[in-house]
Length: 376
Image (cartoon, rainbow, N blue to C red):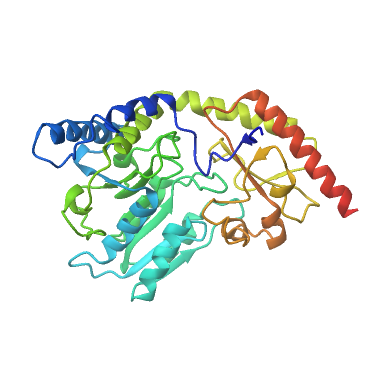
């Protein structure tokens, strides 16, 4: 049985063979605990520190500001919970956007349930926040402004530097969920004014189960996991092989960023040119990561995902797929629930070929035409 063409890069990316090679020495032979005070531990710790340098270099951060986690969900939880529960924290309000990932929205809602205040700012119909709306939502009671770099469902790229300036003007910390932006778009935490940033490896051809939190020096957050105190407050034995994979993926992404971007643009344009059925791009047409296409098809009001055999695609985030509900991101853009459920998210990248895109266009055309014919 042949596998469908994989166009779900927004959910996870294939492991780059070069990343796998970087991980291999630390799976069997280099199994030492990086916190052990002997040669096995020293070798593992050296590999961890190389990865820390690779991650820091990609975002222009001090090496010591990178703490490894299990992924962006943990990093988002640590950033928000750690900031709101930090010693001496007197501000109690969180400001975020309606289109954020569930790991930010649900963490913020949890904090609101135990005494914090939550302000959710709407976005415009193309998915970008109106800076005036955001500014009006801010005040000196705001502890943190949390905004995603690249939206996981519609691919839009927010103006991080401008948002940081607004947050800092009221003395708030600026947190960025960069799970979909790290390694894909240029991010300079110093130039952009980012105070906390969550990243993950498996969106940039690295392994699942590892990520990091960037924390600007002197930004105080309480530990999320208590224990041995590794990673400056994030307790737990470090997975050397996974961390080495994150570091290698970051280094490769830095080298290939322009090439990967150009390849994604070519694939996107080829797919759109190959679609003979009418389609609508959800999200800003230009200010977006080109490896993401979220499409609706006028006249099609039933979920399409199960009607496109031969393609591995999604109708939204992988995290939300199990609920069966319409995407909260698409409904935040003003799409009716039926249209949101009928939309498709197509993700492609480094290992997607032009031939696969051509086949995908053919299969999508056929599926949409069938549904339009059934609708009469």
